[in-house]
Every structure is written in C-alpha cells, then in structure tokens.
Length: 388
Image (cartoon, rainbow, N blue to C red; front, top):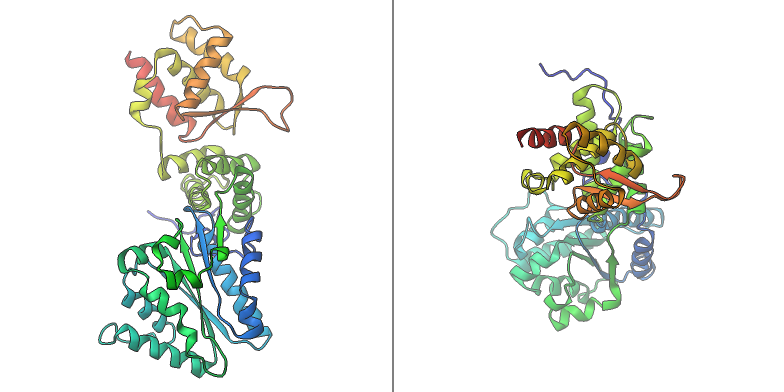
C-alpha cells in the first residue's frame, strides 16, 4: 500500500519543475545583462522594446525571459512604473487568435474564446492597458511555430501597437523565443523592429556549467547531505552530451524518486544511472549483442568495478577484466589491446573514457557508466556471455 508518511529525500520537489524559476539563474548573467540594457527605455522613457532569444532546447531561454520579466515588474513597482508580463507557448497556441486571446485573458480570465476578431481583441487589450497605465511585456515562446503556421502578421501588429500613443506612452514590448534564427520568417516591416542586434544567443551549457546548475537545484530540492558530489557530477556528465539543463533537472528529480522508492534516504550514483536509463536510454539490447566477446568481458569488468562508485580508473578496469577472462576461460588481451577495447566502448557511447583531471593523482583514464545502473548492466552482459 502507498505510504506518504515515509521520510523523503525531497525538501521541495517543486523546485525541480520546469515552471520553477530560481531567484538567480546560474550562467545566464550575460544574457540577463543584455536584456536589462535593451529594456532600459521601457523604464526611462515609456518606450517599447523588442528582443529575440535564440538557442537550442534546455539552454535557459524561457527561464531567463521569465526571471527577467519578474525582476522588471518588481523594479517597476519600486519606481512607480506599472509593468506586467505574460508568456504564450506558441506550440500549444499556434494561431493568431488563440495567442491574442491568452493575452487578453491575462486581464479578463472569463473573456469568451470566440466571437471577437483579432483587431477587436487588440482594441480591448489596449483599453485594459490604458486604464491601468500599464506597460506589458509579451513573451512568445517557440515563436517560430506561430510564424511558420500563421505568418508574421500578428507580430507586426504587436510591434506597431505603440503607434497609437496615448499620453506619449507605448504599451507593449515583445520578446520572441526560438530554437532557430527567425529573421527569415519575419517580413521586412516586422524585421525592422526586431533589429538583429537585439538577438541574444543562448549556447549549450558546458559540463562545468551544468554541474553548477545541478548543484543549485539539488540544494533547493533535497535535504542537506542527501546528494554527494559524485552524484551531482554524474548528472552533469550525462546531460553535458546535449548541453541541456532541462534534461539535467529531469534526471535530478528522477534520482530523488528512485531513492524514495528504495527508502534509503540518500542519492547514489546508481540512482543517477537508473534515472538516466528511464529518461533516455541509449543502451539497447542490440548494442550489447553486437559487441564481440572481449568487448563484453571488458564491459562486464567495468560494470562490476564501478558499482557504488562514480568512476573507476584504467588499472581497476584492467584488473577486473583479467578476472572476468579467467572466469570465462578466455586469454586476456595485452594492455594496448585492452585500451583499444575500452576506446571501442567509448566510441559506441556505452561508457565514457576520459583522461583524468585535477583531484586524481597520476595520469590515467577515468571510466564512467552514463546510461544504465551497473548492476543492471552486469546482469545483461552476464546473461549474454552465459548464453554463448
């Protein structure tokens, strides 16, 4: 029977939601500075401003836009400027009418979803903003979906919203978020408002950056001492293949859930591997079947040696490999050939084999499992070897 009273590793699981925005975004300071610089006229002169955020999935575009808008609104309140914001996901609302309807719903939640033209809804929005003497930042997330399906007309209307000024005010600023450069999807009139210098690039996160992000979220989400540095490092290592913070956060939440399922009260590297295997496993039965016998023996040795550890070194792996060869009555390969077997597994994406860095004495190779818990991998490889 389900028991909700058991002790959980989670302190605040909400902080691992994709909708949660930390007070400080790690490694997006430069993008925040650019947005602040671009939007100064909104605060100083009641002028509108527009920006384009471009980058692949999981690079912090949406979170940065939300954090910026929240901070802008708070700053405005402190300086007698009424500013608000709303975000529309254009993959979910990919027609012009559904986009503008959601914006109108920000002020009128019960506004009917049919019976009004886009022009009429824009007029209603204008009256709401004029009545409140408010400047609104509209964020169109995945804007390229809207532009491809409906064209640039709505974007053009929103960028020209300020042409009918009242009391010298402009009432709408626009932020477009896209995985791809969207300037080719804008017509000349709209593109002239979105200057190319207003485009802010979001590069993929590096391993070191992801490690900081994972450490921050782990501190927010878990009780003190629940997650060690080895587990944090492995989450970052797994996600660094894509440079994707969303994937890192997804794995992080799953590690906590796996730890709670076992009732162990702490998160280990094995939980990380289990979370990775559930979230996105690139280890497949066919990969293991396609390995030759000595590659399998090498993988078995690594799986046995790495259980409970974040990584092992080449000497540890080679020693376990010799034991596995003896167990399966195979003559072990020489050191150079064994190194080649390890590199084969690294190339296939089954293990990570990299030169050791700071904190490890001597020059050796650090071997990690990224995709699957060691005990699961050991069982799978053993089944194949025994079946031969």
